[in-house]
Image 1 (cartoon, rainbow, N blue to C red):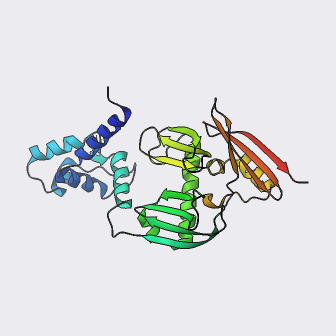
Image 2 (cartoon, one colour):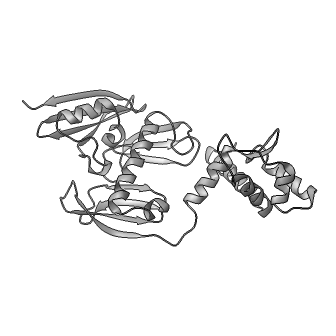
Image 3 (cartoon, rainbow, N blue to C red):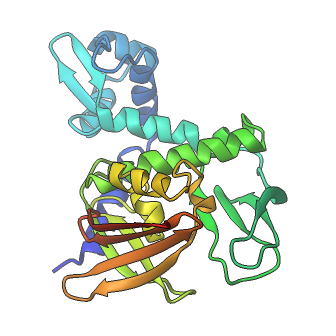
Amino acid sequence: MQSEEGHEEANAKEAFALLGHEIRLEILLALLVDWKAARTEPVSYAALMNTVEMVDSGKFNYHLDKLRDVYVEKVNDGYVPTASATALYRDVLAHRPMDTLTIKNHSLDMDCPVCGEATALTYERGFVTIDCQHCTEWVGFTSPFPHTGVEQRDIDELLTAIDTRVKLHTELLRHDQCPDCSGTVAVDLRLEEFTNEPFVTVDCQTCSLTIGLDVLGMVRGDNRVTDALQTVGIDPSLPVWELPTGTAFIDSQTPPRVGVRVTSEDGTVTVVLNESLDSVSLITDRQP
């Protein structure tokens, strides 16, 4: 019996193999030229064949049939690209090969929450990382981010864009939806490898997306948590890497529940989270 990982690999190979011919790519690109989502006008068989500059109808039919019902759909007036084709096209444009874009240790106006020293931003291999330049005790933050989004922004704009993207993705995950493929997700409440503190990892059940955040970062979009943080003078709109780390703890092994306790001059907020990413317990203690 094929493992889940082997099944995913086979699906990926099949998807790539379907586009492993220049004629099929030409057919697909011809259909994507005037793509307008559900309002895309179909391209007739004759027009499509003419655009691809094919004269051998047998060869053309062979490659067109390979794409049908996967990347191309036959409708009454001709052919249109499927949602899978347009999603793939957008991803290719977003992650197309370009000159290597790298940012090395750009100093940020933010101190490490552990040692108080300077932090810096690095961007390489498509990942943005924010970490401390002086200690290894702070886990920091890392996330994939398309290089097109980096090229078009200065550092301040980039930081805002990254945090906005993380917020949106986290909210989708909290509602059991992968931000990449809309599939369902699996939640793992575990100890973080480096700090040995509770950590939340979310894996898509369909694609390879994995997102990991600390407890507070994962639930900061919950209105109850937002209100509680504001009550004790903590700004919930801070970027995820600037939120207070608090004290994380395991509330229960069975069923799995993790929590975090955040303290400010105005009081303490304690949040407990379950595998459904619901705030099952929220306690606010204000200082008199």
